[in-house]
Image 1 (cartoon, rainbow, N blue to C red):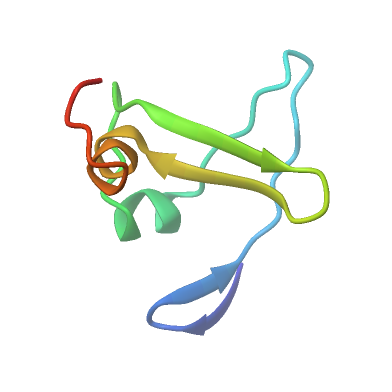
Image 2 (image 1 turned 60 degrees about the horizontal axis):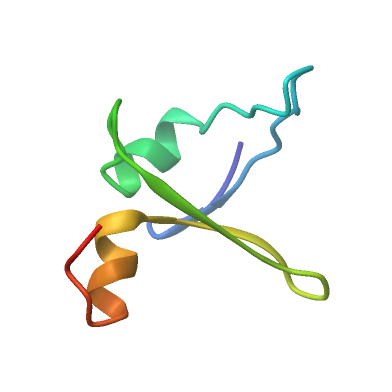
Length: 66
């Protein structure tokens, strides 16, 4: 892991045979991701993939229903 500052880091992960990745502990701590949390996977062919906690996503969209 390369730490850039207190708010950023860069880390590589490998995709397993089932298409799964492990979210590094630093990211889980920084974004308060816990077992059982739901994440939204967003993709843009030109910009790449982003993960966002579902509750934050729905909050940003103005819809608290999940």
